[in-house]
Amino acid sequence: MKRVSEVAEDLHVKGFRLELQLAHQQRQEGDWDGAVSAVRRVLANSSSYVAIQFDGTLQLGELEGYQLMKSTEPQSRVADKKLEIALRLCSIAKRQPRNLHLFAQITRKGAELAVAVQKTTGLLMLWRAHKMRGDDPLWLAVLSFQLHESLLVAHRKYSQALRLAQATAKSQYRSVTSRPVAEIAISIGTLAVLLDSCGLNEIALPYHKSAFEIIQFSAAIATENRSMDELYNAVMDARILERNKDGEIFKWVRSVINQWPEDNQYRKNAEELMQRALARLDGAQFEGDIQTTPRQILHNMLTSEEIDPTNEPWVGLIDLAIKDDDPTRVLIECRHKNIMSHPLGDPRLVRLGLERANPKIIVCQLYGYGCEGRELDSINREFKGKFCDVCPDRAPRPADWTFYDEPWDQNPSAKKGL
Image (cartoon, rainbow, N blue to C red; front, side, top):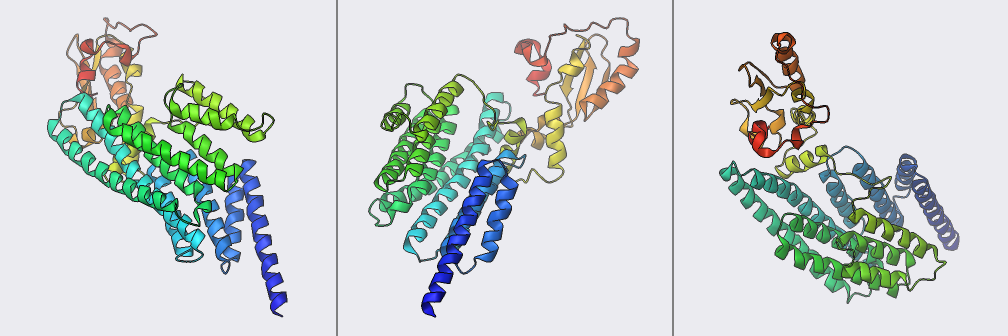
């Protein structure tokens, strides 16, 4: 009877693994919703099988994380999802089996780092915007303090992840850790890129170097374990860290790829992705690329201040700020028209990057007429009905004129942050 039970259990495990493989194929074919449903069915029916629960939870996290990345949800939700999945993995493999426990712990540290980096991202965006404006030194001081604290948190999470990665090198179970170790490198590399973009090059450099070293460690684990999939993933993750066509990371990536047979599919895929990486450095875009949008930027800023941008009034304010960010459609009608910020505008919206959602005033610089309101289009309809439609001195601007093409010193509304 014991033998029969073992055979039955083995068949169940093989069946569940086959279902997870089929879900992976659905994902590759673009059926993400179907893949999510398939993995959830496996998890619902395999509660007594630790390894299946672990692998299924990990696979589900990848699917849901990618769906969040492609959605209009705040980018912070992606980092939160990573941490949620990591905590589930830790719960599944609390102490045993040891290899899955180590994998889960590294994944958790990487996810905690990703959450800290995501918050720092929003604060850096706010800090840089207000530093460029230079009109609110008190708020800039507050942001500088918040940013300093956030960077300290991110550095602590980085140090914890780094220590665990270093300890992994001595573990007999390190063969399973290539993937979560690479995730740590990606978060560190993201932080380095953000710091560099804000002119904090000296702070960014050690993080950048550390990210590359951890990626190399991930690749070494994959090589030791003879896992071509994990080696390929580590090498392709490395290319994301590089910002210089002749940089050492690209050189390393090429040296690894060149060791693979020329007819190897991994090599063909890697060479294609490398060409795309080089082209992106020149500004090229490709189908399927996830673009940074104004909405994502505002989401990042708000979530860094512990605000949920998917709740009202923030949803409406974000929509209005994006819509009224460029007043070209209003000002092109007459060179005498201008827009000014309203003296009763909410300073908090300005501090959160939502100044375009504040009330505005459309004025005629020739005759001094004016109308005020919150939504640019509705203010303009009132202004035109009262003044423009009967004005003999209307002077349309050139058809190709845009608000942001006008020199700063000739654009009073730009100076007022409008």
